[in-house]
Image (tube, rainbow, N blue to C red):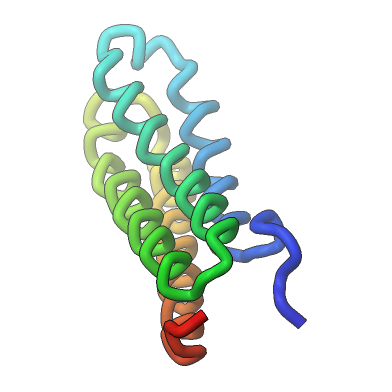
Length: 124
């Protein structure tokens, strides 16, 4: 049986965990000096969750797969910022690794869901 809400999807759960970590980290004083980075990182993390939710609500495999692809791009952007976070001292190595892991696993779950949706056809 399929998911009844986007919250049940592993891809959304992982993206949400990454978003929670991003929001906790970006409340730190290191981000007071770099508001642009705070906005970019929060926006990318939030976009991943929002895209998964929006796609889920489309009820068509092709459209859902499209929005999952957008979420993957947003999670990749979060992963890309890891080195910047470390260079400005906004997080520890362990936190950077946790964020990278959550975003990577979220990408993998979204890609697996895209593959599943494509296997179901695009006529719905």
